[in-house]
Length: 450
Ligand SMILES: Cc1ncc(COP(=O)(O)O)c(C=O)c1O
Image 1 (spheres, rainbow, N blue to C red):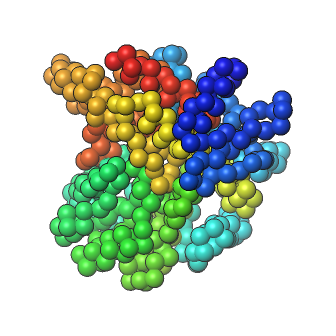
Image 2: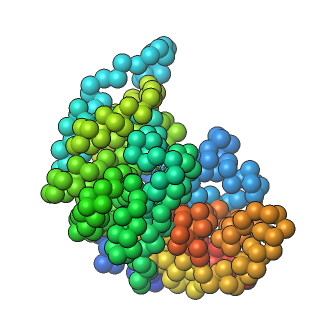
Image 3: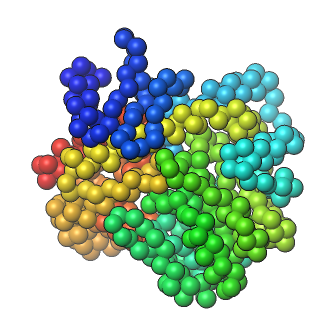
């Protein structure tokens, strides 16, 4: 970072109520920041999340996908939900050790792997998981699809509170089930569940997919909210599929409460929880996940739809992360808190056309771009392009293209996240602070000229 950019950065951080904590003279700027009123303080972290780790040209979805669409000009890719950081050292070490043994025959999954999952949940969330109720597979999608095949015959309705993760819609298409979107209420930038609407829809749905923390809005659901959802689902015989893949990223004072830890055992028995270390340690290419349920009947029925093998390296990497990765993940959480604080402050000060209420969880920022849509005439362009192409072009996909071409930044269009996603874009902040800053600067200066 050049000196003037560093000075500007410091001036901005100061005016935003954020203080950079610098390392020793001659060292790289330290990672952590102090935010006024926010808890993120980490003076001497062991891991360097400021390291620029170039992923371009490795066939990674995050960078090589947008570059394939928009060309080499893309300077910051902030789309798909994985992270740019070098992985935790314990993961690399374990993989290197296993690679030194040059044989790749079938794996007999060690009992210690299930124990690592159980211990992680106990240690970090005080959740007791019975290892005999854990089913390991190759991805949260696979588990959700198996559960949909079990509980939701083709044509039946699957309830979701929206906006929600776009991948659920592809799971529904795959299982030929039908979405029933319960639009969340948006008050002062914060989403809440419309329980009346939810209950009306629950009467006719087979399954509800709860996402906690919610991708893309960043909501972390309270025990009260989850209990109420659970009671409604129980009453109307709706099976709950609880996706907690983002649970290791919770901002500051917020608290993640595993659904399976709720005191009402009846509603817990009506649920299956889906998890993975793939978000927490950016192991999404390594294809290991698991689900569990206290309801053995549910478990056996879903297991009957699960024919999956797991990958040796995936098990090795995941086990290393779950047994030795706590410190890395804790430091990363602080760093990502800083990214959120930085983005919130920067947007407030420099991007009057964009609104962002800081997420309670995940490393995703859900931006309200309604004024950008208006300013660049995205609605009209989308209508024209829909008519000429015969496909459904949304204003948000026009905004995506506009930012790619004018700011060289790739973000995801809100319209792909179901009902209520219009007028929003999702921005993935799991990258270096410098790249977050670069993306926001590029976007701010493009918008200033719009
Ligand atoms: C909420 C949520 N569930 C599931 C997935 C995908 O999980 P997997 O790669 O294990 O199938 C993602 C990926 O972004 C996600 O955000």
